[in-house]
Length: 263
Picture 1 (tube, rainbow, N blue to C red):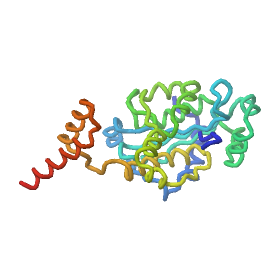
Picture 2: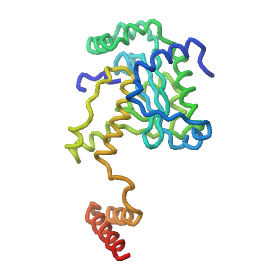
Picture 3: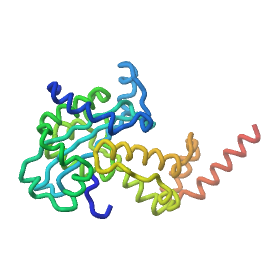
Picture 4: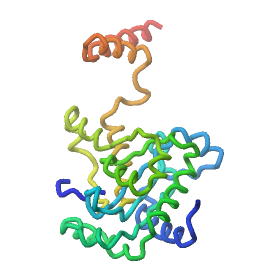
């Protein structure tokens, strides 16, 4: 959810609610999809990343409710593996009545508010999302949860969709943490980042989170194939001894390059 002013399989009707929205939220031109055989899914399942974005009636854990959950699965290279899943959840009336003006306006503009009356129950939504995750992640505790400011989403998942929370690894990949580091270390990368237009809908927002991490990887990370083992070990040793690793990296890289030239 971006509601901040500063910034057990499913029943047939669950499937219908899930799939009618997907083409609208993830246009073909905006997706990298790879049809996977069952065997290929299994070989990649330990590298799978589970991306989730939630929309809520607010950020108050005690009183606000989940109203939309979207999930996409990527491989370790950030390729989206299928169309994903997007479920709308019907919240308690008290949560609707308690929405602040900012959040109400946001969900009205996005069209989500009009869909809530026909939303699923929490259990139906949880069943559908968990079934989707299990197509790519067969073992519990293997895949981390990914997203933007994902700790907030996970707090609501842990409260309302415990089976999903418990199925995922306790580690999380938070794109917003990488964003904050790049703002401090490589501000040009930070300020030149791709614009967002998700419109506060869960599937569009989580798709943009994946695109954002692809950008940070390409623009702000060490290019592939990365440092050699020898260079990495030299940096690690220097850090252990209290250095910043930079001179050690340069020296080890220069020595390695000289050795290659001699050959």
